[in-house]
Length: 139
Ligand SMILES: CC(C)(COP(=O)(O)OP(=O)(O)OC[C@H]1O[C@@H](n2cnc3c(N)ncnc32)[C@H](O)[C@@H]1OP(=O)(O)O)[C@@H](O)C(=O)NCCC(=O)NCCS
Image (cartoon, rainbow, N blue to C red; front, side, top):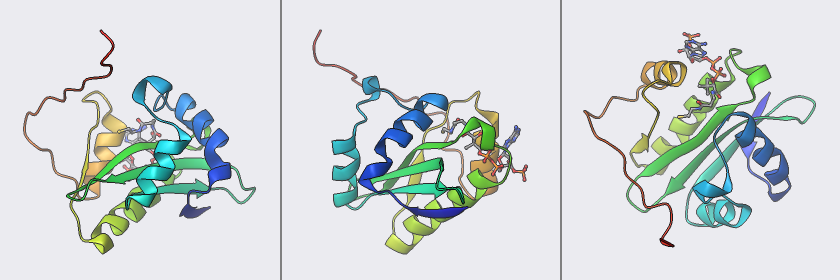
């Protein structure tokens, strides 16, 4: 397994992985253009790739000039529990550290696997904040 940067030809496999891990979808405003724009803005999309070139996991980090936001972090279900998430989290933290910015993420309170992983690797819980979003301006 190698961890490498996103390439435009990864996009179909990424869409598939995000569907299988419950991470993606148009309702979240995720598409190829936004991924590539976020990279131009200083973000990074890390890919874990198997020896057979299969895309196994993603970690998408966006940069707003102030902090790195980690999201779309997921491992293909058949490959979970093999240490890929751990390695990818460590690489993600390394990216943020080398860039010199704090790294922040949101995780659902019931996602105990992910919470365990993130806290083991240095993320601290940020009190009782709630998360809000405007998904659409149509109504
Ligand atoms: C959360 C996720 C990324 C973990 O990836 P993974 O490759 O399975 O994790 P690893 O094998 O590297 O395990 C690393 C750590 O994760 C935690 N973990 C992973 N699977 C776990 C499980 N079934 N139960 C409890 N903790 C678990 C543990 O802390 C584990 O370390 P340990 O084995 O030393 O205790 C993966 O389960 C996933 O993709 N889930 C669906 C998408 C998702 O929820 N992403 C997070 C969105 S915020």
